[in-house]
Length: 326
Image (cartoon, rainbow, N blue to C red; front, side, top):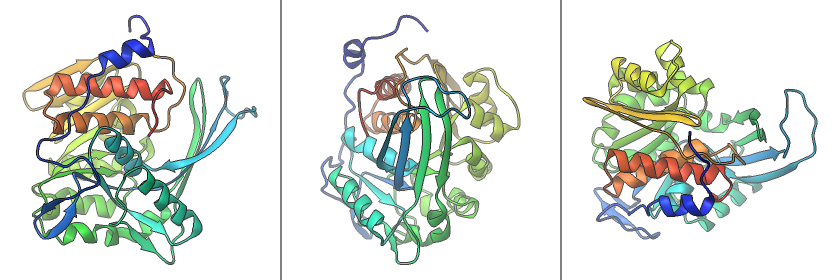
C-alpha cells in the first residue's frame, strides 16, 4: 500500500469537492416540480443515535476493557447526509424519528449540523431507533442495529417523495435499513425513474436486501467485498472481480471497497481501481458512509470517474484517521 501518509500530506492531496452547478449549498431551497424547498439530495433510511464504545488496545472476542462510550447522531442515511453537508451540499432526510425525548434531541442535533429534518415522519407510537457498537484498533468487534421503528413506519417515510409523482430528477441516497418490500418497491417505482439513485446495504447482514436493484438494473451500488460476495453468492479475492460480477448479475454500476486494498468502480464498458491512502485507523463506524458521500459530492460537482474515486478514498482515509467528523 506504500508509505503511510501524514495528515498534512493527505489534506493537501484531497481536492475540494465543488457543489453541483445550479444547486444552492446553504440551507436554502431549490424549487423543483410540485414540491417546494427540495434539497440537493434526499437521504432515505436510518436516522438514529449511535452508542459507540472505543478501546485504545486491540480486543479479542469477549474481552472486557476500559475505554470511552459516546452517543452521537448516526444511522446510514444521517451519516451520509452529515458528510454531504460538510462537502457543501444541502441534504434532506426521509426517515422516521419518534416523538420522544431522544427523538427531539436527535432532530435538534441534525438541524444544528445543517441537515434538513422537516420531511422526517415523526411517530407518536414508535421509539427513536438506535445503534450500538464496540470498536478497537483491530476493527469493529461487534454491533447491533435497532432500526425496528424505521421498518415499522414503512412507506410513510416516502410521502414527501410521492408528492413529486415521479418528477424528481435529483440525487437519492438509499440505505439497506429499509425493509425488503420497500426497497423492492423503490427499485422499480416510477417515483425514482428520473433520479440519480445511490444505494448502500448498511451492513453485510442486510446486503441481500439490495437484490431488487440488481434485478431492476437501477442505481449505483456501494458495497464492500463481503457484501458483494453475498449478493453474487460467491467469494471474491479482489474488488475488481466483485464489481465485474455485480455487473454480470444486473447492476447498472457497482462500487466495491476492500478495506486498505484497491477499491473498484465498474460500469458498462469501464472498470477502474485505486488503492486508498494508508493511515492509522482510529475508528470504523461511518467510514463507508463518508466514502459514499464524498464520491456522490465529487460526481455531482463534475468530477470524472478517476477524480471522484480518488477524492472519496482520501476523504474516507481522513475520517478513519480520526481527523474529521460527520
